[in-house]
Image (cartoon, rainbow, N blue to C red):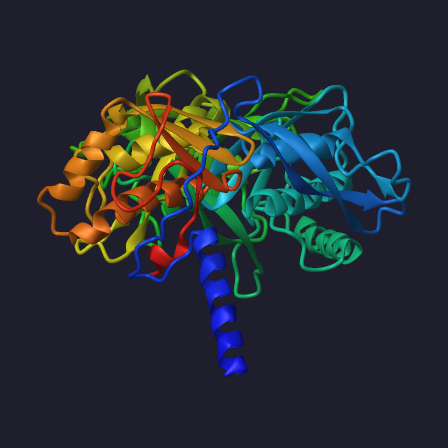
Length: 531
């Protein structure tokens, strides 16, 4: 009997603990929380400010390894944790850690950080300092490890003044946290690129030709065709390939569409290059020829697309971001609309030699217009970059919540108000939308510590009651939990939010249905089904 009582007491304690944690079985109604006189935190100077424990990766004193230092980092929650962690990385190790050295130059400035689907783009600026090839590899490794710890994003692209530095003029591809020790990584990179150096540019492709295989970041469109997001893709090209040849390969990969099939094409179906991509260098040598080690742009001449769904801005953005993000020292792309001219009159061999080429090398193309500004840069498309988030909608029966992927502007990825507006205003496939509620029902959303406070507009409780009593395919007993925890689970999907407190027009809420809304509510993973 005593054993039975003890087991019963233990079971009761477990049930009580689960209730406090806000977790329930999939088909249970979340238990009511004990009524409280507590008031939610008010919006004040500390609103939207928080902190987290960051893992910062510095160099050991002998520079033979990356070592982690944990540090509490304070930040504005409207920005990403990656940005906050990288600013802390630039500040250097704590003074009480003499065993650590900087992994990023103290002269560095963080221009911006872009969360973009599967990758994080990091932009540095440094006055009067250009990192060596080895220093750049160490910086990339430290940045990749720090971003992965802060955001859970395992792929980064690190840019220096808006461009990829590469390694000794060769492509590096996207960077992920190291799986091997730093000295082994550096030694392998040195060996690989010394071998590449032996393959002179323009070497003919034979059966013995080796191929370079790296991860490139390709850009495709969201379902609405309004935003660009990144997709990691493996690309291979022969040793000795020129910048022009690599650019052509990247364009072919874009034309092939998203291999996973969830992102939309960015190039029109009738996209056609009228000539091979042209590399235009910014500098010249003392002898007056182009300096192939200087910065450059890639010029593309294409035929005017006729496709009805052709979006010029999306196409230009995808081409610019993809090409400049992979090929070293390319800081811009010029995209021209052209047409093939009438064949020129035959020329004799003497004329060909004076022109510096053969008749076969002479391109008969008329340039009709240049798209956008003269040269398109990465920064021109920052506002078009989107980041994938998860919103939670109920199924038709109201039994479970489905996670629905949505791409929103990356600048709003850490904005809880924007995320809530997307939840209430978007299409809910494969579930059902929340009837009656719209983005206009959200008066304000702010953070206080790890608590998100939603101030619903006046009339929220009345709308919620109407939803509970109205017509719906969902069982009446499931409607409230589906709506309330669809909101709570959507916001707590953000790393800085652990609970959600709801108000109506600044006033504390009580019980509308079965869930007490007078306290902060925590995430309820028991309602979520994973497909």
